[in-house]
Image: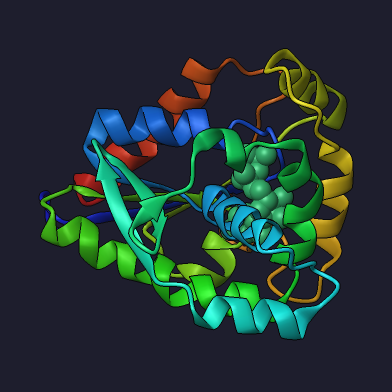
Length: 224
Ligand code: CDP
């Protein structure tokens, strides 16, 4: 790899494992486009719930998804999903209703199929916008979306610690239940793929996690 080449970093992990804070810090340090794919599943879920569509009705989900026009709004280094040209407000993405429904929608093949080409296309968007690379976080990035990413990271943490993190953010969120659904689904289950670097963040502060991954990125950028 040449010293100036584009770097693709995949970060997967369970709810409240520290993916977003880590990915944001890395995107700033290395000028990477940041894609939080959980927010994409949340945006589609908010839109479907708003239209009165339940995850128990896959045919209705499919019908609603065919009419949606997905796009990207780059806000600084952050790639935000737009639906019909508009981003979904942050408060809607993190509502209790979306927290409760998102893993059920995310288990449907039609929902995953709607987002797969969109997510892969963000690598080209990052290149054409002059970013040094793309850092994409989610559940299946290193296993399904970019199995050949330059660096694949899997963050995990003790479930009790993760529930405390969410409570500190003031959110009612069944972290363990979402993990159970996300790990046991048939389509693109959350998994630490072979060859990924696993990091336990239970007793590791954010700067330490970031430093560890930053060292790996630097080594890749230098051709290591
Ligand atoms: O931020 P938090 O850890 O709460 O979760 P998130 O990253 O916002 O993801 C919300 C939900 O979207 C997850 O619980 C999964 O059900 C789903 N998701 C997924 O299935 N695949 C991804 N690549 C990202 C999220």
